[in-house]
Length: 205
Image (tube, rainbow, N blue to C red; front, side, top):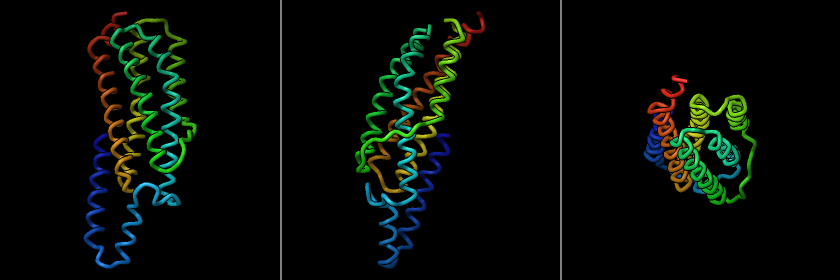
């Protein structure tokens, strides 16, 4: 997924260069400036509205995750996993603040739009906790549930970053890129915990 997002970003740069080369008349240049408008320049654009809808979606998702992570942390038995959930909770609270900052950049107040995907992923984790006794098997299941969440967030932030870059919202894109990087790091950490100890211990039970 990361490769795809990078490709989209590179494709955006190529497209921007092409338009710049072809903009030989004042009318064409004006059109280019409008399509790449900075923050707040294209509030009526359907493309901009798509960006805002996706931003509302991830805002709801992150706030919902803030409520779910403490339950996952409490259910985990692996010390490494407990620490990973604690760290991710702190990071997620920061991600909420960053999304609110982007809303401010767009000239609007933060608004959450229910994210059915995140609601479903969190519900799966909660069902697992209610059905499994505390064990390494539960830890393995919690890692799977957490990585499903991470993969959704990676897709969401990668897409938002691409849209922001395309519209010229460079500051917002940089913030989204930072969060995207952190989500990928969390996903890698969860894989490391699973492969280094949890999965082996779960198999032995």
